[in-house]
Length: 173
Image (cartoon, rainbow, N blue to C red; front, side, top):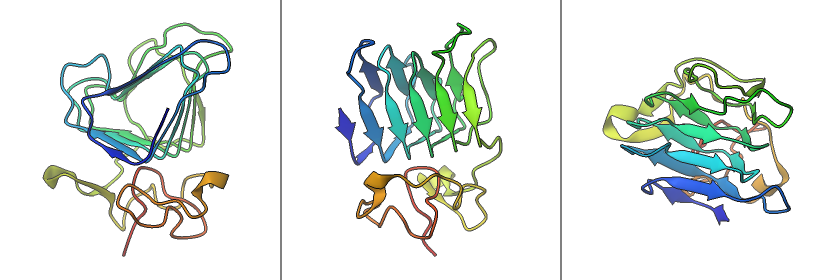
């Protein structure tokens, strides 16, 4: 599964097994979701989530399990940004170059170069989840091979500078 780009589905659930199935979700915005287990739920999927923005949901932003990886993504303004998993083991999910503030009590994640701050969206109150010029997410992601020639959710080049921004949208001046 590769969803590129997508904007505001009801929710995304990635299910799989411990074999070779590794679903990927990129350049997605999940906002305004209410009543789901999570806006983005990777259950047993060993999923890869890259450059997504999960914000403003009346449910947990994401629940990641079983070796799932999230990179260059923003989780902000959800009931809680990250829920589960609650098992402490070597298979816990990894978040790298992500921004989030709240984690459910007892949830275990491995973090690499993550930020815990306000992402300073351009105008979230009006549905604009692009980054403002003052965002701490600017140039804080990790470039990936798939980004060459790719577009962000707004249809702009995924790489606007030398280092990719966090979230579904690259900053545009």
